[in-house]
Image (cartoon, rainbow, N blue to C red; front, side, top):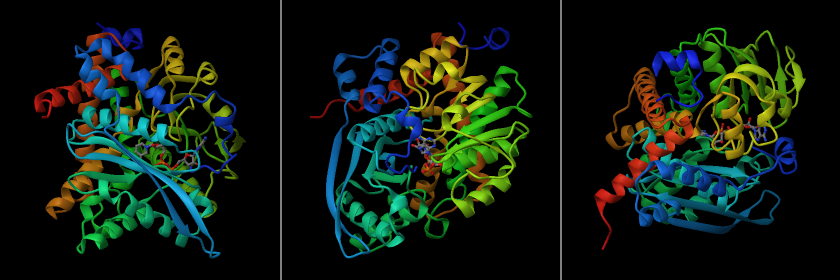
Length: 444
Ligand code: NAD
């Protein structure tokens, strides 16, 4: 059997933070409910697994969902009410793990989908966690540092009943960062009367964060891409890369690609995109973004829109912004020649998946491709619990080892089942969670 979409020759060889109203690529496209999308993906994997109806029903649902509404004192003396969520999808394989997103668009269904994808992701890379996610409806770019701290500490207090190193361990996601993780860790620690660093990951290194965590997701994306290139007999040096989103995941993916000898020809953020067919100077662009907080206006490039960016010719297209970017409208315009590597969670709708497959493109799915973040979060948690810290080199070597192993686990499953990498990853992840559930048995 061969993996679907593997080019024939190789097959033979191997067998935003967004402001409201400022999301042009969302507005111009059909937007699929992410939870419905996660359920449709789940349904596609189920025929490959021999599971009983009760288990299937259980895995489709989230174990617990908490919605909180809470006040925050603003700088002008007024009080604003915010809504936040924390959802645990499944804890059969260990404490729940998943990021916290600050975005004006976040809602309960988005958090449910992201929690479910975390469950499968942790199982695909075989680390001992279940899946969770959290979110607060807010635009962090419109809040002062003081307001952001107040909001974070109150939200952390509201969801504290779910948190704990053995229970639920948050991490950064869109719109949150190491400083926000530090405030959550401090708030939780103040409630307990002693420091509990293992309650969150993605913290600054000086309070128990791991070396290499900030870079982990983007590096993991490129380790996976590099392994795919090696496996399919393609040359990575000089490969043209396009990256949508220039936050934590997108910027580090672009930098790592640049360091690996690829030519990053275009990147974008919520404000728009930039394109230089000769290749962007990524270290210089990072300096520019530090100062201006956007890629737009960078002098050595042509300005383009996010929609134009998705349609650029390249070898590797990396959606690293948000959900619903490759849809039945945008997917037919994609001119990537080799791979779509999903840095973001849920960037490709099931319709787009089918279109990309027909175009002969391989999609390295989110639950494999961007798992580097949770892998190094796992390392951070282990280091915090042991109070024994690793060198960055050790972290990165161990990350590479797990990403390479997981790539082959998924790739081999895809060949065995004659299906796509996404379906194979889901079959692997769902299968491992189902197995753990059955081994534990039904209580009482
Ligand atoms: P971030 O907030 O650091 O960056 C998001 C970037 O995307 C920003 O540059 C923003 O301007 C841009 N953006 C937002 N909406 C956009 C749009 N509609 N069009 C174009 N650009 C847009 O967030 P991040 O942590 O880099 O997360 C990005 C994606 O990666 C999310 O889907 C997230 O769930 C996923 N992810 C993150 C991690 C992690 O460790 N941070 C791990 C795994 C997956």
